[in-house]
Length: 452
Ligand code: PMP
Image (cartoon, rainbow, N blue to C red; front, side, top):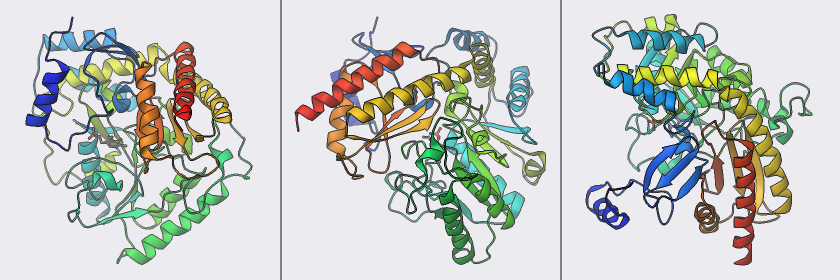
């Protein structure tokens, strides 16, 4: 039974003691109390289907019993730092984690958050290449710290102060809103449905622009790294045309740089077909950063790279008090085991395909839905003014979003214009959850339409 502060009390505490820049989703935020698998319960005991998994932090389900017992068992044994001693859990964990990595990606740094992982990846790229400039994509989110405010390109997460030098943003190869558009079919969940012979034709045009950035905006023409997600998360499940990441990696390499895949949102089987999102693009990065789903809600993140790149860091000792501490490593290991035992990558694939199919049907019934996209259980529904590509005004999307919540489903928001609903549930959802969601979305859009 809930016995914490009332909603009213939390309002008061928030206005007095929580930094005002901290933002609560929903006009009337939810006071969460408990979670179990894909379900969340608020302080009044109301149940919600969680389609946002705390922005993909929860991969195998809230308070999954196996993960909870791994944490409990370790919490009775030892809580400590990782670095200066050895602890079996950490060793077991990095062995298991690297067994999931392709190619020479076998060396691990354990850290506490996605931001920390990307910050370390910037350092490694500079140390290894000897170059300084780093390129990320327009609209990207790679973390929040004063050093990452240059890497993250999404404007609403950047303060109007000078960001660190050496970050550039390449044109976003967005098939819906990018300057060259793209082949929507190339993004289909149905393999082989792209009409382009091999790679989507638009990928070459975006690569020309990336080349232009390298040649004309960087004095040396040399670059340390190119960062990209495999599907952009915060920017509203933006997928790239087929072939883009592969060509970008080759171009960056030609200019002295390495490719960093930010798998913070797309990793751990979420995209369904593969364990890592980048595998769907036929590439092997030089560095992979991961967080969120790695710990199923527990603070854990990692940077995985090659021995050659990690060796370039030998000049300085690396220290991180809590990165991959025994509790985090016990959780991380249990998460990998559950993913395997419960075949959650396969479930992501099947539920994702079913979701997309149902959402496309909903799209044909509601002209407010301009686009349905994504892969596995990382999906986006973009709302537009009917018959146009103009984003539906934020207040209208908020109205729909709030109605969905009132009917018992938590769903994410995103995109440059905040007009995309983002679906990223714990990967244990079932067909009934998808059917329930479609029913609620349909009802919410109808209720909204009646107010227009
Ligand atoms: N990369 C991506 C793609 C993310 O979505 C996020 C968080 N939204 C981060 C990095 C930063 O992770 P964290 O909040 O754990 O620092």
